[in-house]
Length: 291
Image 1 (cartoon, rainbow, N blue to C red):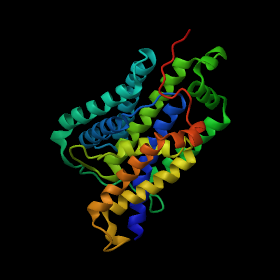
Image 2 (tube, rainbow, N blue to C red; image 1 turned 90 degrees about the vertical axis):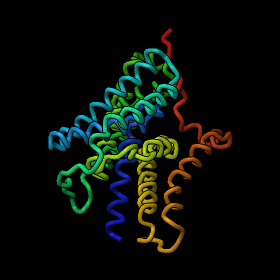
Image 3 (tube, one colour; image 1 turned 180 degrees about the horizontal axis):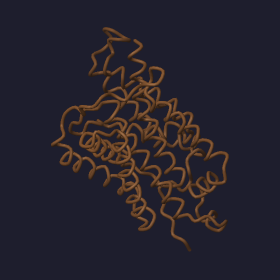
């Protein structure tokens, strides 16, 4: 049972880090539905780097770097070109799905390195995830930088008149978000499940995306949602440890994705937007053209 909860915390860590990256971008008005693709790149290239060099540090750094590059690419299409942000994000996901399959195929199999030591029985990345939640909340809620990010996401025209560089702010948020998504992918591949295989994330990026909406763009609610989804995911892998004899593991495997669909469907309903719409950044997904 203890192992079940530890593994649940490990899974929730990945959701937390990736979702924090997406939340930062969305608070500036940039949505990236290609979270899965960025995580795939971070996981695959981080895995390959660590396996070739024997260095976990280099693996994580490469994961973060490729995430930053993809965040920059998404920013170019979304901010500079003013393109459809959903289309750009889907392009990143499709590119990640295809290229990582080709690049990672020769490295299929286990990482072949000693596992990263735990701290007080829990992965050190769990503490990193909690720290990121607190830091993100503090920056967005208590600092002038956070005010700039939120103002750009709410009303970029007013922010620009107030002296805020909208394009630069959105670029930095997109890049920072990409770095965290790439890092989350590397944590998955190097710590949670250090065995590379075709499309081995299995939709975790989409769950992270749904968590941002589920949380109403609140980092602490998002952390609670990550813990819930991490537990549900682990339950889908080992239901006999907690609920023996209740449904098969294949039924439990669908639960996290079913809840994800329910969250996204609820977000699209009028009653939800009317009641909770105030939490959503007003300019989310909308290109800004400086007048």
